[in-house]
Amino acid sequence: MAKRPKTPRRASRCSSGSPEDILRHLDVHGVVDKDAARSVSERRGNRTTKAGNRQAPEIDLHGMTSGKAAVAVRSAVERCRDNGIRVLLVIHGLGTHSDPASGAVLKRMVRGMLEGELHDRVRSWAPARPDEGGGGATRVFIR
Image: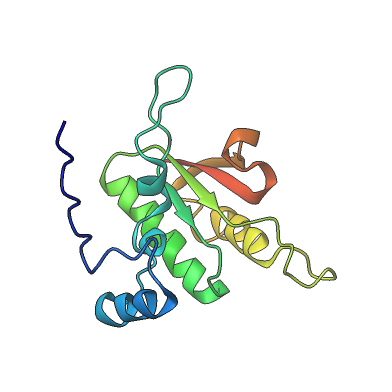
């Protein structure tokens, strides 16, 4: 039986290349954080709950300042209202990097907005279910 000739590896493949090959590849192609370029919903795909319902759309506020997070929450609530979406999951985190004296800054800010300026657009809100992030996220029920 004749041996098949080995096909040469493409130059852009660097999984087993030397460090110089890897650095050359990075210089040519750059580094892209693919996860940062996609939303959390896209990374999780179109999963469904046990009941077969689609999961609520999500907005992840991790790494945002309070000001940027407030703008993002307002925008997400408006988009949900415009598109007839009734439940929004706001992921704000548990506040582990917040000052212990003041508590979870984003969590407090989000819930304050829901009870304050957004109360006419929001029917109610509740802490997320454990499989959605528990105390690190808030389920928002849109009017």
